[in-house]
View 1 (cartoon, rainbow, N blue to C red):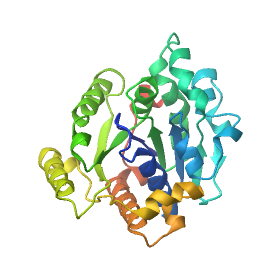
View 2 (cartoon, helix red, strand yellow; view 1 turned 180 degrees about the vertical axis):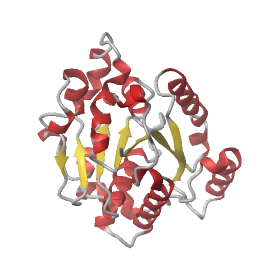
View 3 (tube, rainbow, N blue to C red; view 1 turned 30 degrees about the horizontal axis):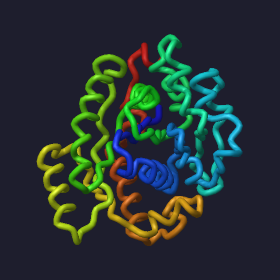
View 4 (tube, rainbow, N blue to C red; view 1 turned 90 degrees about the horizontal axis):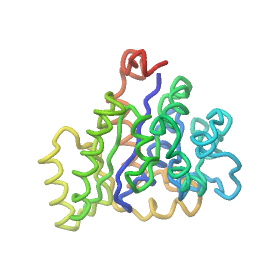
Length: 271
């Protein structure tokens, strides 16, 4: 059973998609079978690994709303041999309205993804910047969540709200959901504020904070325009090295799962 990890924060511009793309690519570069799931109607993760969302015929939208088999929409990326994509499309923006009267509407993504966990070592879900039904679906499907936090003052304000949402999901929909870690992003060593945010987050959340901190990096910003992860744009850049370090940190944390001795599902969840 592979590990399903959602990357979520209702605040925009904190590095969710950048983290999803480059963490998935780094795990694939380490030769772990990895599926990147684009659960954001903006479809930036889809274009970020070389696909034009306009050319996508079937996406995660069809899986959740129409019940299409998830395996039938998975695309093999040309960027890395161990990296696959479940694409998104602008149609996903209407999914929340269309799913409102469906039974078990919060579990549609779980129904689609959980069978795929046997085929991959890691499934990384890029969530949209909201706490709507699609993000709730992602958190219900996931085993854990990574929370990117920008090293700026206002980024801290929404963190408590997201953690409260995680608690609600744990109590009502997914009791096994864990916080994989809080990831500090867009760190600028020259700014006193960045260092203050790092200190404050580590003080309040301690062991939940990843050791790896993602710096502001030009190559990270450039790589989406080429439709490739930063590891293929410039493997020696600080951004690339940081995401490889994050991937190694996550692998080390989940070594029991990868060896098949952890992350055992309850019978009702595995069914």
